[in-house]
Length: 304
Image 1 (cartoon, helix red, strand yellow):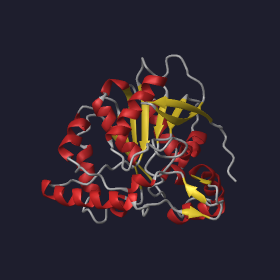
Image 2: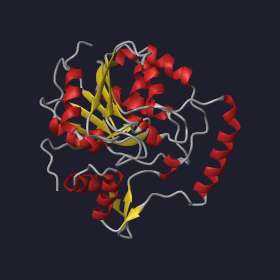
Image 3: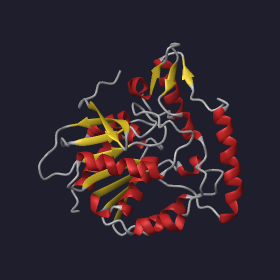
């Protein structure tokens, strides 16, 4: 099994009245902003371990388990609202860095959270990294009735107990699932991740550490015009990193959301550098942690 070069430690922090599990590496350094890492959908903070191990410099790094994922409590709701991730991030920064801007990096959904937050609170973000956080497809007002119907139907299915998380016989089964989703993931890393991505229940079955309510469709439509307004307000230097495998077409193959369309959105970001990691898929921080760490540390060396 993989052995971390820089072991993390865990803290429980109450944010907005809810206990959050936060993973920390290193110690605070005077005059140097902390690096905050935000994981993606159905992922956990431990997912950053390989990148942290590949970094050349020791940094004070803060990585929360987002609400309803990993070791953070389920919110006790039957659906999740995206704005809550911004609220949780705000309170996390108030706790760990109340009087300074932070370096902020997110992957996938976490990258989307970081981009929007940096547009809402530009003064709180010194440097910003987005790893494959494409955001959501554009929508039309005519889609609203159908979206609400889908949301109501999925709410009912959830309350009937039809929305569940997968379970496995043991940690090896979880690791095999991770490797099936990402064939580039070595077995020793998959086995290590499995210990953090799932846990055994009272029946001995290993279940994914994610609230099934995350699977429900959002009741509201994405308004790209609002997203672009937030992108334009970002003042931090931004690093955009995508994989050599065009994963956007896989995630949104039914939504007609193309990489070219997303690149047009990035044109609205005032200060941006674009990079590509070769021989990697959507989980590029697992596939090529050394290359991702290099890109992040290059960003951290830039003038805020």
